[in-house]
Image: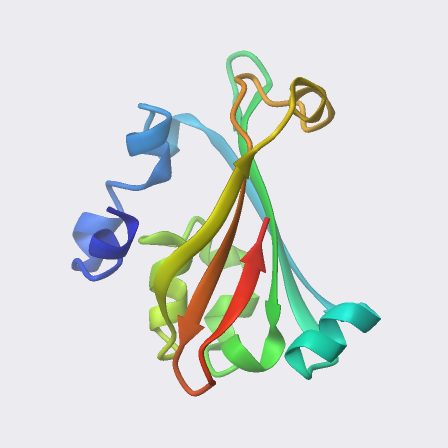
Length: 154
């Protein structure tokens, strides 16, 4: 569904996303914050991806009536992958209509297949201050100006 939504017109993407499909709650009913920062790759990531700089994107959605965290994400991607669209480096454009999949499409990158995932533990739910037991870690293969390689998003 996320990939199909990323291809829809902006007016449609702006009214339907993870908040509406996964949480059954409009994004306008949430307190949403997002942060972008450029970080150095760890030695392992630098070796794996052949890069030094990563874009770290952190966001969270909170129910303002209860102050409980509804969802959160921290992802890292090669800076060179997204720097062609300066809007992808600026939190003022969040929440992005169509989410990460549409963001990546703006620079010619398409997520072609989700290759793994896992659920978190009860302990990680507490650590992450999630109001529900829901934690995902996914890896993707991506294309677009780069060779197809696995790339992890947590």
